[in-house]
Amino acid sequence: MYKIMAVFIYIASSTTSFPVPGMAVYGGSKATPRYLVDILSKEIGHHGVTVNSIIPFAVDHSGIFAEADSYPALRKQLLDSCPMGRLAEVEDVANVAEFFASDLSSFVNGQHLLVNGGATN
Image (tube, rainbow, N blue to C red):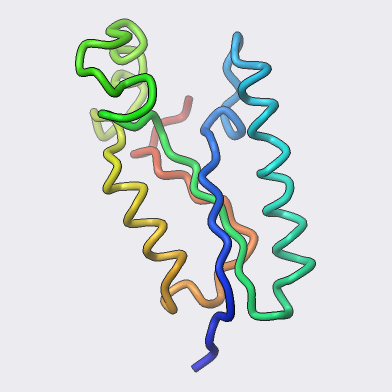
């Protein structure tokens, strides 16, 4: 079996996949590292290095949603846009990171995996 020599995993932002008005500076700051994933996967993949990114939906109990009652209007808007009816949990993102770090993804390179419960914004 092919062995991965190294793994790079970038935690991106859904604003790079779904641009949101009012988030230009934040989203723009996340676009450059996403581009690096695209380029580095091509430049160093032949050395057995995989480079991928995880693009999570809003994560409950983390970031701006660290407090349960924070941003109720935004929380409702996001919940309404997610077919699974919930925000992501830290474990949802961690599970994908574990996959990218394992031999199960040894031929996965240059990918941006949405962890968003099917949300479209």
